[in-house]
Image (cartoon, rainbow, N blue to C red; front, side, top):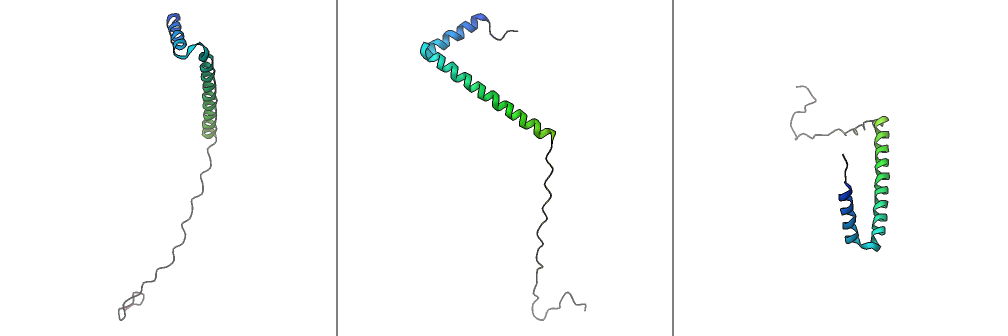
Length: 87
């Protein structure tokens, strides 16, 4: 199946000439070509980066140990029994 028939291609060309004019049409085509080239190269770079990341998985980072918490000192009310002494 063809994307554009010769008649529709002619119609698109005529509309482009009417919209951009004869003098600006080459500049517009050149800018479109540059944009497509940049898009294509960025797509390749992204695909290359994705493929390289998928083939060689990065080693997981070692889990960080939590810092030791200082002991909490609980002061008892005066005259209260101390929990560390047996009655």
